[in-house]
Length: 570
Image (cartoon, rainbow, N blue to C red):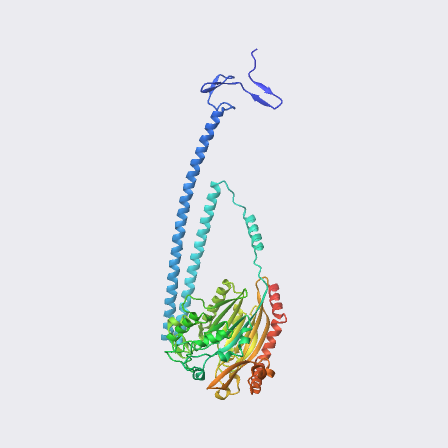
């Protein structure tokens, strides 16, 4: 029997076939048939393997080139589409802004032309249009978001299939994102800062006749000689400046159109005031040209101000970075009755009306909406604590009005943390407001009185008992916790008094009345103790009860307990 060409190795369980190699072909001797290398035989020659590998590599390279070209084309197409979409949205946004300006101008014109009743009906229809516009915009935004979502999802799947990748399961992805968010939660540095606020500064005629030098130049710095250490003590200090800077050529004047020398705002700044509030009933004295020049002077001198702005796109508020704590300030003034925006009986042009933070008491909802937007924008800018400076109320009244209380409550509900009032030319009480949901407390002083005026008791038939000579510095101590929440932890006040004396005309000092007993000794000014004591007592009588209430809320932890209880209830 012929030898078996097939052998079995039971040690490694492999089988061997006898294969003979002829030139250019392979013959299986067990069957006598020719086979191509790699097809009919289990054993390939080294040369055949190299050829196959090279061919496979070339095919893979061709596929990768094709895929790369395709992906590049897709990415270019997507990039072009996004660029076109960006410019399309930008154009639409500019159209929207222009349309809103037209709508506002049209409404102001209708307000002047129509009776109050007819204007209310007109505004009802306008608000309905606004709602419809907002609904269309929201629908378009949702559709665009869905389009981008599905487009991104489809591209992601395409990449996954091309490269053999697998998308992570949604549950795992959500868990990972949650952990990352928790791990990167922002930690704030604990800080304690102080913010001070004082009242109105306005220059009546005696200031203009008594302070020029031989060349007609002014310097009011001596007025602040004794008050500067008190204005400089807080980390940040604010006041109101009433009037315009019309320039020497236009002429200076006191009441009723306050047009003051430019140097006064420098003197105020150099006394320690960091921010000047300009939304007052005298900000349009002299009309449009002095109004715009006032802002130009502030900008040229680099002095911070708010309540008015150079351009409609500028912010309606001011953000101060106080030792790393961002604090926001918004300043508003009441409008008087008239056609369109009217301040102190002076009609404001439609264009200028856009540049002044003002509110119409007959349309408070419009003001609330604007204030709410300001608060949202400030929060987006990183603001942790918000002041509202309100130029409001009834002149020469020691008690706040119901309208003031109504506005204060709403601002508290919106999230304002402290409200500083001015305009009545006398002090009005301190109070603490709690938001409607009980989660938030707001410090409020309805009026801080006068910081600098010539409203002497003997000149004031409306208020002859001296209250127009009185003012106050309110100092709030704020604490920033590690979670970024900034709270009031201290409330204090320093009564101030405007002293007038004769020296080549009428001259003035602003005195702080924290130590009336030794005032004459510390200042070197004699014969003032009795008047200073009377001013101090008027301030304490007017503001003392509210101050004690504020201290009880903010300094004893009542505010923190209230907020904690509200969070637990939620």
